[in-house]
Length: 482
View 1: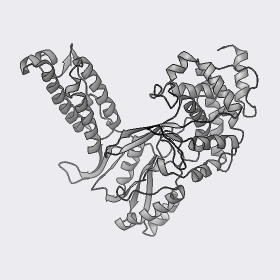
View 2: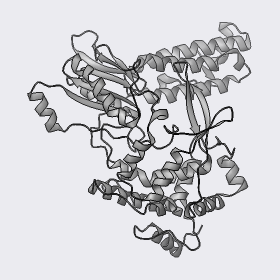
View 3: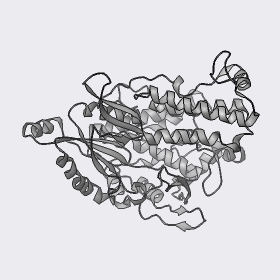
View 4: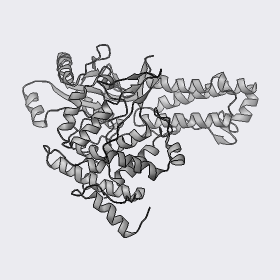
């Protein structure tokens, strides 16, 4: 791939908003250069969408086929943790690199897209256990389909990001689960004491294709892009037993989900407050959401019907077993945290605390227990402690913004007991010899070859600041580096 000025100029003409895809020889840009060019175009798309809420975008298909977008899409697919997980064609990223070559692979994808012969194939269905004992169905597309999906996402995301509500945090740039928890903490300390804890039943399996495509058409006028999105929705599934099933509703988890929710303005909330009416705040992360309510329990109960009415046109419904109304003093679980208002120890003041939920604690303890079963006795002690340390620190990094210090210490204590029992079974040693070989001198702190075991308690607990509704996107002009 060349780096001289003439080659960069050719790529630049492709990225112009008025230019079509280059019909001559394709010059595949370097990844850094592709990232810059894509960011510039995304910034333009986002600014146009934010400046004109009613605008429908045409001629986006050329961007999906553009070399810079395909190069960046490949980079994201190859850098993903699932890069070595194949679809139904059994091709992985490593296999494509070694057998075909990246440029040849991308050229073939681009040619098929431009010739309109590209057709996604069925996703490979896998089932993973859920905490409830049921199985969660996941769909794994082929690497080719993943690259095209990633290119589509690069084009569509900055457009729809301009329309998404600030109360939505799932799978959006510069937003994370901690922002949703911080918002709940912020409002539950300000008279929003009743909570509708809602769960959408089989959201990814039941969402209506026609309703979803209607939302996409409100912004996208390019029929080629619409046809491509629809083809992914209807690609079908190859089950674990090899049967092929059509997908008339739903979307494989991991594809594109766009769902908008309307919220009242601050002026409307003030009017409702003056008339002694309840106010509501929606906090959503993908298909999980809660509605915070000021007022009485009956106000929160009335929301069940209203929420069900909003979801019905999308082919969705609430789960009767998992949808409930709770008071903040009783607490509820959301995104792995337990959120509850309690009196501070030694005082009469009440505060809202966010802690790891019992389910989250049981999950991490289960992983520790699995790694210290008898069937792992062949492992090296150094490997075991290093692996468990990384698992515990990764888990703690997610929960470090809550009131988690005591929980981290309890998890480490449980892990210490499990590792010590594992070492005794493996080496058949007494406590004095075990302490001499696997602890720091003069202590009971675990160590191997002088390297101390660092678990969850080694992660500092830091307060997460509520960032409000003005969270910039990567394409906000003031924050853009392109």
